[in-house]
Amino acid sequence: MFEWLTSWFQSEPVSPELKKDIESTINSSKIVVYSKTYCPYCSSTKDLLSKYDKNFKLVELDTLSNGSTIQNALQEITGQRTVPNIFINGKHIGGNSDLQILNSQGKLQALLN
Image 1 (cartoon, rainbow, N blue to C red):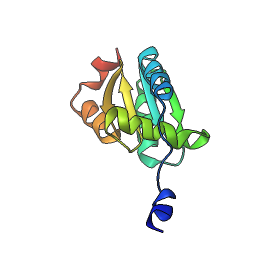
Image 2 (image 1 turned 90 degrees about the horizontal axis):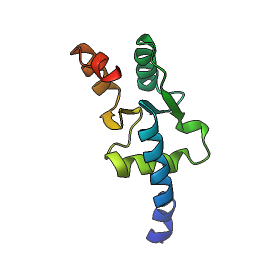
Image 3 (image 1 turned 45 degrees about the vertical axis):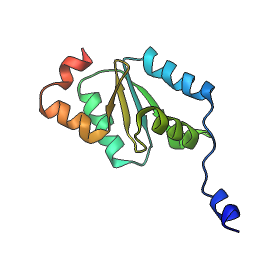
């Protein structure tokens, strides 16, 4: 009974191909944001990046059929489960609070150039 119940909460396994696709996306774009359309922290991130007038690759996980699997893969890659999940120059920045801190410290502009 317990195994049957826990099977409902197990996530889809992440394929090596999906991880490669994600890493390719991260490395082929200067700025990548994995987001969800309804997330207020994601909105803050998108607003801040837009103020710098920088194009960024936006992946809205809640609009993709495999969005939850991508989110699982991001957790395996970065250790972060939450969105937004932000990458600049192929480097994992973290989430919205991390981006806001970089901005308040005056370090974000240099990363974006």
